[in-house]
Image (cartoon, rainbow, N blue to C red; front, side):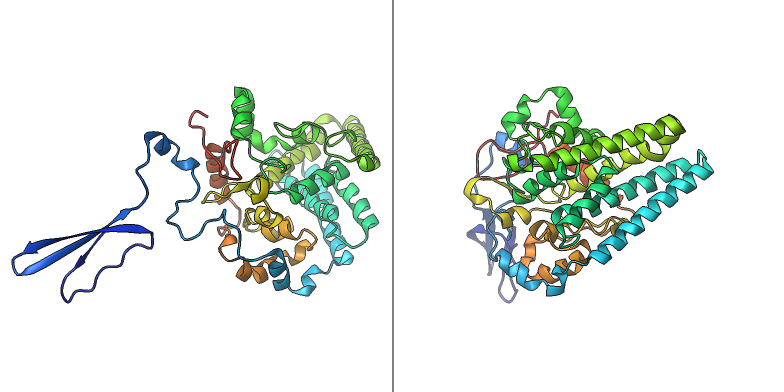
Length: 413
């Protein structure tokens, strides 16, 4: 960019980016024209660097670095949130359970009565979404935001999660690990990035399952059985690396509840016939799985700007939590209990879901640019399919070294 300095003429402003000015003068008759050219101070990139431009952190000329340590602390965010947002109302939580369960049974009764080829696809979409809503309420139980009564949380968590074939305690413990280590390349539990060394070791079929739609959106049941690439263990087995010895009985209890639900489904399939159960339960179950993978992936991936992942001393609970992303789901927000308000949930998972929007609004002033406003959705969050597709095409692995790293792209994938 150049700016012309002529007598009596105001100079055009330079772009707000650090540049090195090179000035020289040209005589034009009685007028002396001075040119000042702003040139980048950085060196010229090599061909190799140009090929990997998407692998770099945000350009240094931007005035905000998402990988920098924030100028505020967790206590500052906590202080900005109104006190009543921390209050858990078990009656209100149970009200949401009753609402969702009534809808689930009403949808099933209506679909079974109509038994129409036109009605079944609508039922699958609606019931799968309601299964996802039940999961979110069980998720609140796992965090203790459902109520202050741990026994009530455990009982309701087992009922809600077992009904959709999720082992409650197995999931609860691994999800706790995710929250405690989010944003850490090596210690995070769900949808964590693959180091380049591990990524290169994957065979072609595994890469396809990980990065090619629709396969990543069907991953959750397989994750429950065998976790993610590079990690071992199962959510059903008490000896898994996920669990401590004192959690053995909890894991066995949840696995027994899962087996009981599987047996119930087998019995109902025998009594009513496989086709009816396929329509009533198993297709909606896979819609629920797709909702779960879709939402949880986009909470941690797919932002327009690259977001950092951490290792070593650069990681902290606050910095990891601030890399999560809020999402707007339109009409679905209320149905799935505002799970899209994810940043504050990650930092303070004990806040009930019905206070998350207010808490987020109160905390925005503290978080500043570390909070990223979600793109507004229409009635249905169709815009998020683009974010999902772009992320799966570009977010493949991170460097094996470095304490602040960004996703890199494998052009051959």
